[in-house]
Image (tube, rainbow, N blue to C red; front, side, top):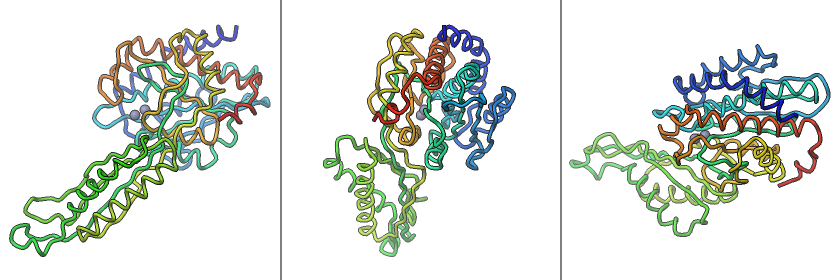
Amino acid sequence: MINKLIKDKVQTLMPELKEISNWMYDHPELGDEEYQIYDKLVHRLIAEGFDVEEQYLDIPTCFRATYDSGKPGRTVAYMSEYDALPAIGHGCGHNLICVAGLGSAFATKELIDKVGGKVVLLGTPAEENNGAKVDMAEKGTFDDIDVAIMTHPGDQNYATVGSLAMLAIEFTFIGKTAHAAACPEKGINALDAVINTFNNLNAFREHMPSDARVHGIITEGGVAANVVPERAVARFYVRANEKETVEYLKTRLINCAKGASLGAGTEMSICYYEKPYDNFRSNMQLSNIYFNNAKCFGIDDIKLERERAGSLDAGNVSHVVPTIHSIFKISEAEVVSHTREFASATQTEFAFENLERTICTMVKTGYDILESEVNLEQIKDCK
Ligand SMILES: [Zn+2]
Ligand SMILES: [Zn+2]
């Protein structure tokens, strides 16, 4: 009965959700610059009767929208991402994440007047580069939220994911310019410090824990081959299963850079150029509820948990509130994320059909929490 109600409601929402997602495909906006879609969502949520806190936490494209039934009860939050990638647009499919959150919030609003409580939609910018969820988790956004739910497109269906803790670190080395042939002895080569940082790091790789992932690029390495480079810059991501391992790897990487800098005779400075992401902590009790609901809505091939892969800003959320971050399949054939092919797959009928089933699952999972049959304390205690 409730499932039928949810199904019918989500079905009526689908044409609008498709239209918004396809519009986003045609108008991709980078992280922290998602002004157009932000405006669209805010207007739409206000029209639907949500109370919207705009530019939430002083982030220009972030919002928190709440619909309060006026009756006591629990609070369920859905999360929408909407940032795209440089050059390949929605190659991570955040256009579908966006409408999955919006559709879930609208459908849950229909149910909440009966069961009580509140439904919240969080607009979370810049997942790819500067995740707003990090600030949200830090600044108490989830203090009055019982469960947070989102989904992400992929090439399989999973109720939950593993993700790695991650840190972004940049080294700048300053040397001294000189003519590289006429008076090289007067120069200090900053590029040498960068190259030796990579060499030191590569020697350390043999002894890293097996879950470590450290990968870097040279963003500045001199301006002309006949000028000794006076400035060179390298950026790295450091990842591992746990934050503690990332801290250890960070210390060792900094030592690699310090040694390289000393050898080259440069000055070195360090900056953390993006927010650090925590690993995703799957809540197995909540994930099982989602898993069973997915089966009821026809996602027959869903698996419980995907192995750890990249990093997510939802990881930080999962450490402060029970969180669902499911994956839903958007293509029959294997399709790799962060590609143009993946972006194209977000526009297919296959993707929208599974999106519809996924939204139903998200709404039913939210409903299970709201209608109080689920023991929330047990979920909160579940690791
Ligand atoms: Zn991505
Ligand atoms: Zn993504």
